[in-house]
Each structure stands twice: as C-alpha cells, then as structure tokens.
Image (cartoon, rainbow, N blue to C red; front, side, top):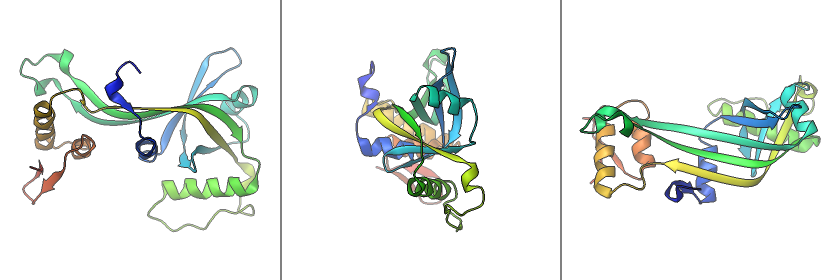
Length: 207
C-alpha cells in the first residue's frame, strides 16, 4: 500500500469494519473479460463473506465460469469541507473513511448445515432488533435461493483518519467536527481515537 500510514493491519479491526455495514460490492469477471460489480447484502461470518441470491443471474454465471472474485466494503465518515481550512482551498477538502478489500474464491454453498447457518447469520445481522423464526431446510423458499461463500485469500484494510497529521491538528479537527454536529461526526471523532463527553450541552473531546 502506497500510503502505509493508512493501512489497517489488525485482523480484529478489519473484521470490525466488515461488521459495521451490511452492503458490500462483489466484483466478478464477465464472459467478455470486463469487471462486473454488484452490490449485495452480506454477512461476515466465521471468517467468510456470505450472501444469498437467485438461482440464476449474471454474477452467478460469472462465478461458475471463474470463481476468483474481489469483495469490497467502505464506511464513509466525515467530509472535511473547504471551510475547515483558513485559506478556503478546495484542494484541502477531504473525505475520511474506512474500507476493506478481499480477494478470494467464491463458491455456491451446497451443504445444508452451512447454508442454514449462513442464512440465519445473515438475517440476524440485518435484523438485530427483531426475533425471527430460524431458517431451516424446511422453511418456505429455502430451496429457491442460493447462498454463496467468499473464502478470503488476501484481505487488506485502509482507513483515512488523518493519521499522518500532528496531534494538535487532529484534535483541532475533532473539535471542529463535534461543533459542526452533522450525522457521523461523533462516530468519526471516536474512530480517530478520541473520547467524547456529552453533559447535555453538546459533545466535546475528552481532555
């Protein structure tokens, strides 16, 4: 990775990024050799990516023809707008983010036990606040959907949280984000490694 300071090396942190979102992008190769990217609902379960799909379709055809795939998730954080710098230079506007890219091989899950576990994990991931009837091989439509597993062979993570800036710059930015108060600003400040206090008068960076 060219910007080494942005690399996420900790496997636990990579897993946290994967578990912080429910939609990823699957890249396969079509019959003409072009990349084909599809957004899919997924779950990261037991070290693998799982998603379900119809029993026919372009991404499935591509996987059957060539099972080498790429899977990507990204978590957009705060946008550091032009007004945050004294010169109002648009070249200094900046998007903070976290992302994970997986290179691996995809396969259709044929084993009922693995398929059932994956479907229940997928439902639990997308509906964490609801009780649901567990999926079984006898559930309606069970046989009408396929589950695909992506087995990672290489996983890289990247986070741009202005890690290469001074401590003073980062704290000043965190304070500005909390003052701005847009959705995601508090989460960004925490992702940057700062604690946040809120006594009712508004969030602020912990001393």
